Image 1 (cartoon, rainbow over the protein chains, first blue to last red):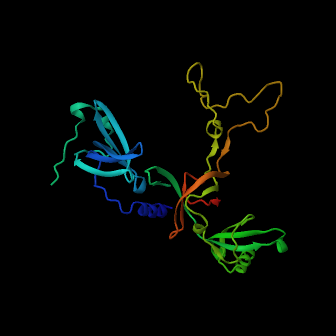
Image 2: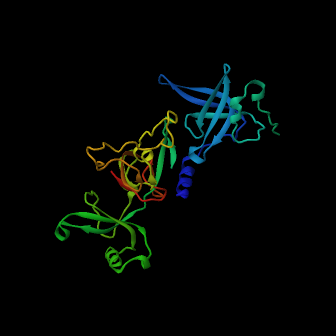
Image 3: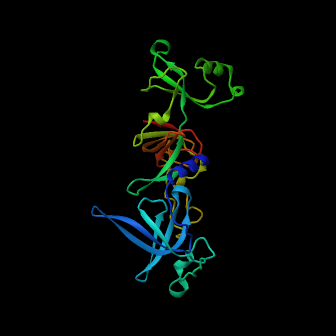
Length: 117
Length: 196
């Protein structure tokens, strides 16, 4: 059964190239939105709280502070509505899931940036 | 299970069904059996695990012994004995199907899980140790008995269940995989029947 899931994930994920990112990174997700029959692209910039799942079912959560209110959005990694993902900053974090950021605000909610050579 | 995206980005959870070709092991006709039916076999079985009677039955169809055999009364395929039916050709993407399978065994379960009772719902007001209890079983002096069929705790799961209104989402003919929207009864690797 595992082989079947693996095979189908290989078939479904073929031809998709996305930048490599992990929790703690700052990304901009350019997402396609259909509004009144017209399609436009909306950017959502924030920190990646988590990446979860494998293969065709993988998804990730992006958190940003919008007008002083924390906003989280969950994107399926292989969604056809994702136009592109831009990696802005690589974060230096010690965890794979950064849920502790939800309780923090201001200075303490910052993520250290990792200098990439 | 896995999931698949539609063109508009909508994600559908779906189950992978490995639909290997079935072999026609017997064709029953009105003259010989009094009714028409087609008997299909699926899955390989070792010869040493097969009785002589079964072995002879399969040798008539000139096939190896099959693990599962099932008869179908209403069928639209015209195949002769010994021929194989490819299931991935039988179904098309977008077809509405029904799936019959045996649900996972849950063991002895109480009424909250088995019949959806609400339980007591309160932890205070003198309640103690009764949060998932079934409550009263009925009247006292009349009818002086418990009615038949009253829902109580007991064995749950392991039933034959038919799920209707599922859709064939995608077919991978090279590996005989069929993706069906939603979940189907049974554990991983169990055998199900797909009906159109």
